[in-house]
Image (cartoon, rainbow, N blue to C red; front, side, top):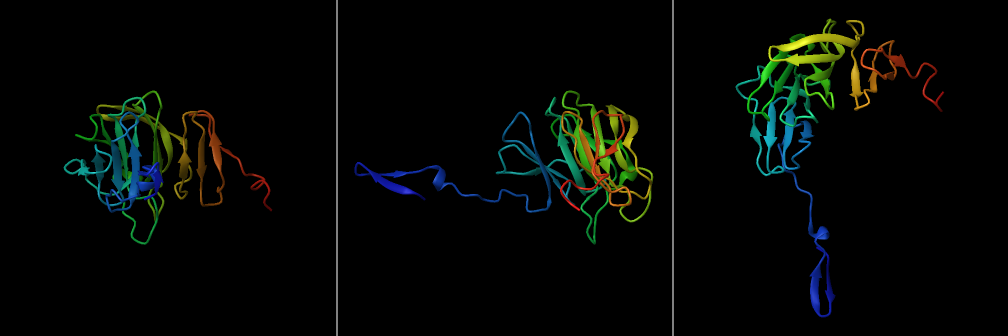
Length: 226
């Protein structure tokens, strides 16, 4: 703590008195913030469901027990246009020796109080979910698919329109071969998407519109590299 004497009185610099501390949960996973409430965060555990804090981490509560059929959360997203809408993509996508798979996508429309399973059960491992910045019912999903074998439900899937009964349509913006695994880094508000694939199709891929298709940005190699 920083202290100094001014006119015979001891003063304390408040920011220097602050220290970082762990606020939990003590598990690996991913965290997203509520876009409207700075004290609300959601945590998707790599093998422990979805947790929520409403007091900036002082207390965490599991909000997925009783709704989820699997426990590994690979991706979690809160809609910018409606902070009560949360999507959870199941299945840990960081491949290790004991990776846990999931059963598709779940959605909550009441801030995590209840959840509905939307489908995409065979995606197994979901790396990213991106929600349209103005429409909470339109989402993109980046699915790894089966970690150790081919399957058809993999790729960057979307745009998907969500209805009360689940996903209405599910086209594939970039659907690689069944043996190819996509890794989506980001889909920002401009819908610029990037996707690298660890096969003969490897590289950085980009699309400027939801259905325009991907273009390999590194056909001539990485700029400045041999």
